[in-house]
Image (cartoon, rainbow, N blue to C red; front, side):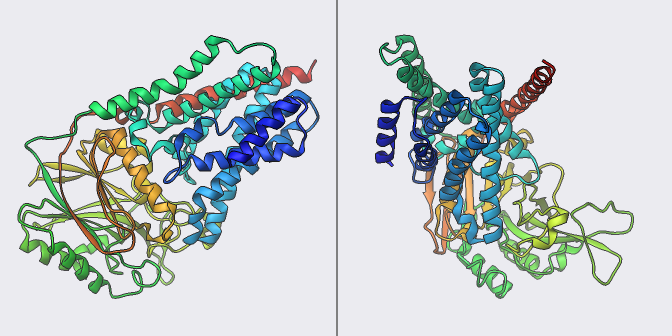
Length: 551
């Protein structure tokens, strides 16, 4: 990759931005894709992201300067090449669980990103360069915000996530969230490109000291402040502790979990728990879809074999709360409102919903329920027109039922409130902020990352969980079927972690938090305002186009 960078710089130095041979535009587009990949967790170095878009901006400037026809078409193609490389090299592991869904995610996510870059090019060409470069971070943040909130959401490559493997560099996410990181990355890219373009367009003139100083401050100030905050931020230590036990059962999701004996699997998890649970343990945590009992109907939960086995266990541990994932269902009664997600029985005029669920049970036989509401497109959510192509992952498929807002789990014994996040809900910081505003003091992530096999997927997921701890200043527990189960403190440091593909149990003492970060209170406000500015920008662009057509 370094060789590509050196060659590209030499070519631009020799030919200038306006006379760059077209065959090298492909090289620059590829270079952007490779630099974005080199900066991505779990193994990348995020500072690459601060100049990763520069080669593609060189391509855009070349097409803009030549003023040839169809520049928009060409730039979209070069952008798509760069984005496809980035998407493919960082999230190819999605194809391990669903080949069709994985390919669709790569193709369409690259398409959306390229569309944003195309809009930037059009604004720059139709209005002026200053407005164009100003529009790039605005349009990109609006895209990321929409991608966090629409039904076909796949925000895994939100630019600000790129620093999640180096939590000492993102402590300021307590104010801005990951979209603040996206804004910083894009501004740094534009700043570095301004140095590149000014140097090559004015080869005989030295770069202004103010420009160099401004770029240095832009890059260095957030890093220095973040490192200082990470160093000095006090880790929670207090009189109130909550002792937890995490069970990673390591049950093969492909060949065992949903086809094996569900009672034996539950007994295995309870046996693992017995190695660490004692009278002081407040929470026992099992992973996503840990309960695969086919008869967990919410209309009559006490009839489930799995629920009865858990209650028998909790009877021996009266102070214990068990939080577990389960595949549940609910049958609708006459007079109930039937949601769009509901399925109709083949042989009866009645409807039911499937859910990816988190349950909290205690010895009093009280059950608290949360339904996963940020669904994986193509796996847990499928538009009605494509419902026949739904992929079965986790015992439930098609479009699952959801709930309108998150709900917290409360323990009267430990006086603790928990945010139960299921699987990749943990990457939606604004959504998790709703839990915090409802009083959540700890965040429990339950997941089944075994679908992705031994790939960057589960490693990236843990990085995003560490980022979530910083955003909310809450201690985070991640409990996986296999993969990485972990304890993370408020600074995002991973204190304990299991290994891949082995049964494991973690015991830890947690410190509940009650404070609120600015981000937890206000969510993805940067993206919201970016959407408003983008709408105004597009309206202005349309008006300018209409006025131009009448001249």
